Length: 165
Image 1 (tube, helix red, strand yellow):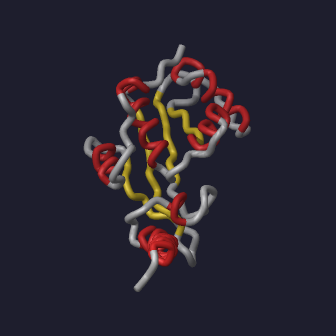
Image 2: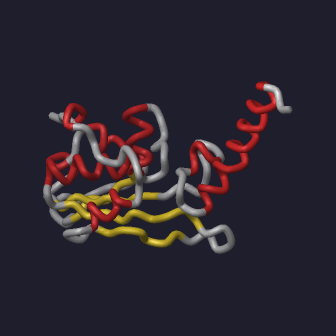
């Protein structure tokens, strides 16, 4: 007969083995399965159509653009593209946990604010080639489809909608 401590050890070992296996089948995010800075997490690129980055984006995002070395000529630029992962790390001091889930919530908030946005949600890198498959793009149904890829916490709460400027 197994003791309580044996059952606890068995349960812990089972969880430690099952979590990474669930990640392989896209049933769990990479950060609890392997590590926070896992290269397997998804990536998101985001663009806002506008006159200039200063007019369309909050100051923190514009600072992130400069820190990446990206320069824009407002007269020639129709689309502003930047790395939301860098912005999140600079603004909040943390990486975008849960792969693209947090960034997808940020895109939803930006979509509510600006209306004219474009994004690519890319899956985790292929183990052998390093290439990423595009899981969702901004079509009329793209954002809703991208939210459906995650079971929890991809939509921003009403109380936490970003308030800039």
